[in-house]
Structures are given as structure tokens and as C-alpha cells.
Image 1: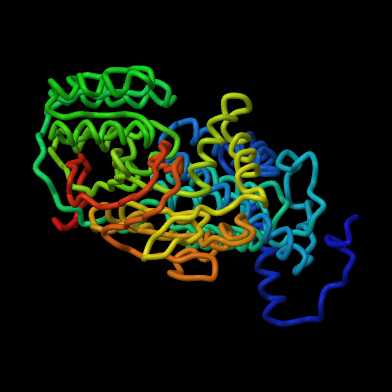
Image 2: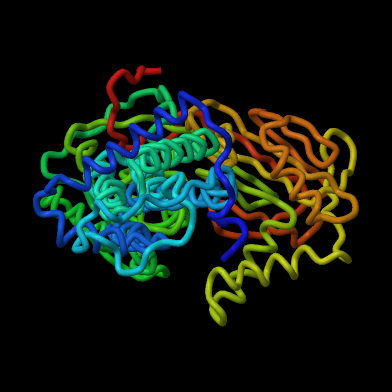
Length: 501
């Protein structure tokens, strides 16, 4: 037997209060063993076995992710991370600190007992900790999914007493530790729903009963065209056009000629194209997230077809800022970010490899190639001096760290460019890592950060890559980044208590 779970270690000396609590715990266990649990005989032992090694919760998380809703996926991820933290705590600290033997099986009817009895110590219950951690984590992100998971989590915890493998106090302590793990995860990475909603300037936009007057252009390559069909169920009079990526721009122009409201379903690059068309034609924009990341839609607060449908029917809209870049005779806009340096090169390299080996492996290969040690930093002039830098990042609006995860904007109309510069020097990978760790710090030996309305760079070498909303272009000479305040009207469901800005 593993010495970490050696049950031959003698119990510590007598302690009156502890002895009374242990005696009460034993009486509660015997009381539970003597009781008839309606409908439990066929269900609870099987459920207890299915929860071994987190199998039940992995399957539940997979089912939640299969719902293909952003909140369902986030709830599944939060539940699994909370479970992992709880399990690590129980197995490395909990069971090694209190080596309590398992309850005697004498009072437990044979039909309830597990076929394979656990050999680890009894206190606390790992099954109860995992169940509580997963259930609490899910509920913190999605109360609706939490209501579905809670009865299952409760049943798993109770099954440990029912089958005779844990005392009641083992289960209660395990459940408390599981909830504590979920709270720790929430402190590190607050749930999306807990972010403070921005007080965007509200805008006048057409209210379209059942979506009449809305034309939604769907990028078929985004892989989530089914969300557009769900919107068709919510807004049956909306016109929905699905097309290939190379047809998106032309379809958006055709839609803008006749529609009262221009709609788009796709990733950030597709939404960027739609925003340019909407600005040119003076139309409000309805954005349905349909790509991989959907930064703009999620920061805006639009997660699914139901939310967007409610906003369109009610005429609920806000004004948001647009970022602009100009260089020589070229110009463009960005809704999320634009950047110079290693990131645009990483994007281009990733695109080259993704067709051969897939997205995630391509990202790893691209990072290894782009961050090799013999690279030279980009040289560009600003502030009257030519400076070396590995990365210049400019966000359309201030990006905030959410726990350990950077990258959330709480206001899309704050009039600011969030500029981060990673200084040139040796070891680009270490400098980029230091920047990520520094997070909200405005200045470090590796990077600097400032919020401005306009940024001008000079002496940008020919052929320098600039990435914007996932797309890549070339710039040279003088590059100007600026903001166009409250330029675009976008549908967004209003939340109770939101200000008008």
C-alpha cells in the first residue's frame, strides 16, 4: 500500500471534543445505513462508480460544450478547472493530513456496497469535492446549467454515504473544499457575466418586428452557420444569406443597398469587413458571433441569437468607437486591435502552416519560428527617436486584466487607444512572457503602456506587417493610429440599470 495512505498509523491521543464529534459522525452514518433510501438502490451505486476519476463530470462538460453556446462552453471549462483544483488539493494535502479509516461496512446492506472498495483514507471525500467544485463552477458562469448539474452533484455526494465508503463529515468537508476551489477560480478569472457592463451611449436604431428589414450575411467558413439558422427561428422575417469567404464583401455590399439593418455572422475579420460597409452606407450593424474568438461581439455583450434577436426587435443599440490606421495611400479600420512586430508575422506564418497541419499545431510551429533567437526587432520612429521593439499593440478601447486572463474591454466607447510596446533587446520570447506576466502594470523593464487618442510612427521600414482583427497587411513610412468616436451604431440588448452614457 502507498505510504501516503497507510491506515496503520495510530490515531493521536484522546481529545474530548474531537471524540464527541467522531461519535456523532458514526451515529449519523449508522442512522443513514439503517434508513431506506427511495429509488436509490439502482441509481446511487452506479452514479458513484461513474464519478470515479471525474468521468461523469468530463462527460457532462462535453455535453455542455456540445450545446455550442458561448456560456455553455465557458461554464464547462470553469467547472473542469474548479474540479482539477479541488482534486489536486484533496490528493496532495487533504488525504495526507488526516489519515482516517473508512467506515465499517457492517451496518451497510450488501446490496448498496461498491464492488471495488476504495483503499485510500476516508477524510475528506474526493468525490464530494469534485462534485461540489464542478457544480459550483458551472453555476457561477451559468445559473441555468448550474440548476441542471446541482441535483447530479448532490446525488454523487450523498452516494458516498449511501454506499458506505464515507462518513457524513467526510462528504460535508469535501463539498466545502470543492466550493472553495470554485471560489478561488472565480477570484482568479471572474465569470463573464460578473463583468461590469459599460455605459455605452445609446443610439437610435430601427426596431424590426420579427427581423423584417434585416439582412444577415453569414461566412460559411466560420463553421457555426447553425447560429444564423437559430436567428432565423427568432427573427423569421430576416433575410439570411450564406456565402463563401471570398464572397462576403460582395454580399455585404448587395445587402447594404436594400436592407434597413446590415447583419453579419462570422469571426472578427468578417465583422471588420461588415463594419466598413455599414460605415460607408450609414447603416446600423447587427453582429451575431460565429467565429472562433468573437472578441468584438462578446465585449459588446452579444452572445447568442436570442440576445441579438431581442435587441433587433426592440431597437436596442449603442454607439461604439472605431480604430483607424493610415499609412501612405492605404488605410483601414479595426474594431479590436492592430499590432506591429512579431505578432503579424506569427499570424502569417500560422496561416501558412494551418492548411498542412491544422490550427493549434500551426500556432506552435509559427511561434517557434518567429521567436527564434537570431531575429532582429522592428525599428520605427516615435517621439522623435528611432526605437527597437518586438511588438506594438494598439487596442480599440482599454483592455483590462480579468484575474489572470488579459483581454476584456469594459467600454467600447472610451475614446482611447490602449497602446502596449514590448521593447527591443535580447531574447524576444522572454520579453513577451514578462509582458504577459506584468499584465496591468503600466511600465516594466520589458514593456511600456499608455492610453492615447492618436499615435504616429515614422520611418516604418517597407514591407512591415500590420495585423488588424486577424487580418494582415503591409505598411511603410508614416503610420497613424487614431480613433473615430461613436462612429458605428451596433445592436446590443440593454441590461437593467445600464446608464445612457
